Image (cartoon, rainbow, N blue to C red):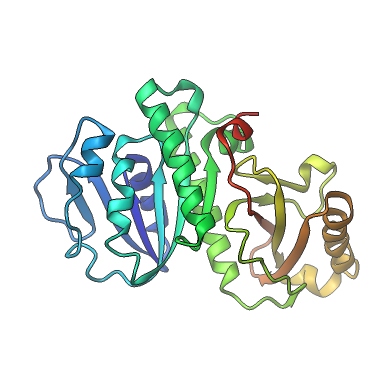
Length: 289
């Protein structure tokens, strides 16, 4: 899979994906740096979103090796985001495109960045809903920070980016790996607005069942991806029933189409990842509730 990262936040996230061999990384940053780098394109810095939108350069040479699956990573508030559509038009006909949309804390943004984020937030979702993008994954930085809990300032951003990248990576891997057992849920082609999250195999409370990286509304589908250690798979006779009960609860109590895949792992503990899908564009008003 190719990772195309636009802007500073996306570039730092891409650096975390780079530790995994499954990805080829392409970063686009606003910089006056003239040095040549096959994996980083230095775009001339502009002062306004309008300048970025109207002055996007040709990236055909930079993208000459890009084909197949692409995950486009972008922080909606950075003004370089205004060049996104002009960039994507240069590859859209030859790739299968998904977007990882990073939403910062919109409360503390200045007016320019707030307007930029609001515009990008809506436009990217509309393109996904129309089918131009295969899917958009929405991730809220404040939401991920809340899930992480308190972390020292010196490592806070590093931990934040690692959490997002590692979770997205495991979702990518598990979706492409044959499970040892599955509910065989088929996702709707209409539910293209998504988020990811971390689950809990044995929640003590309803709140512990799972924590999504974005407060997605009008969820239509939810998929649990279980990584269970081999010893537990061989000895725990009630495991499948408990996993199935969690799916039934979502279906009966919340009317959410729910499925699961179970994978074996050599790790010494179990992990649970989640993907939630909606067919409804998430409005700014909904997001800030």
